[in-house]
Amino acid sequence: MNRLQAMELFVSAVREGSFSAAGRRVGLSPASVSRYIGELEAQLGVQLLNRSTRHLGLTDAGKIFFQRTEQVLHGIEDAEAAALSLQTAPRGTLRVHSRTLFGIRVLSPLIPGFQKLYPELKVELRLSERRPQLREDEFDVDFQIQAAKDPGLMLRRLLRSERILVASPDYVGAGCRNCASRRTSPATIA
Image (cartoon, rainbow, N blue to C red; front, side):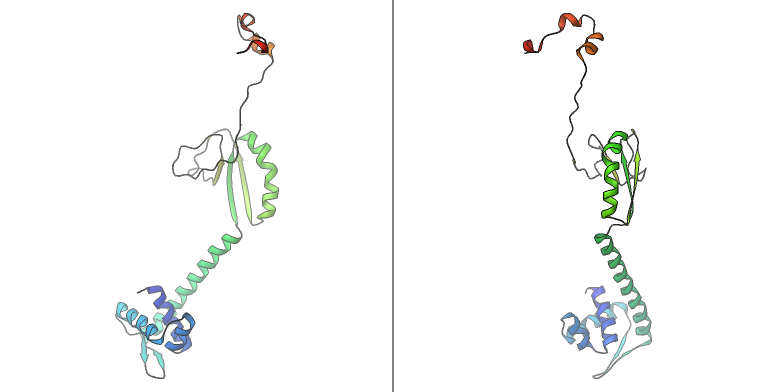
């Protein structure tokens, strides 16, 4: 027996005044509704309804159970609605960490457009060169140059980056003893 479904059928039968009407709402026969409610009563060990051919009446235990169950079902509906509203429109605070240069040059210019798309979402951007502990430092997102070692984190590559060392020949040569004898022209590089 699905306990939640039995509770919903019980509340519906009380509101509608019959097993037939409650069954029609969910596509069940009156006998199926009666069986669900009977199993619920057996599980609780108490009679909830006084049944007659023309009338359903609540017992004292049924009145209390109806009131409480109705509150529970409203609470479930509210919880579902709250969860769905977050799916359609994110809200709250998104805590983001990034290295300083990437945060200033790439992320900062993107934040105003992001907040126009999601006006109920506040972005907190923190910049530093230290690698944060996401859970302990309470960050939701961290932009990193290399993959994190924590297997519990979700990773996604956003872009590739190459590092190229660029310097003038004089600068490179000045720091190297006997480099002049090792210098080669581009044509002689193998």
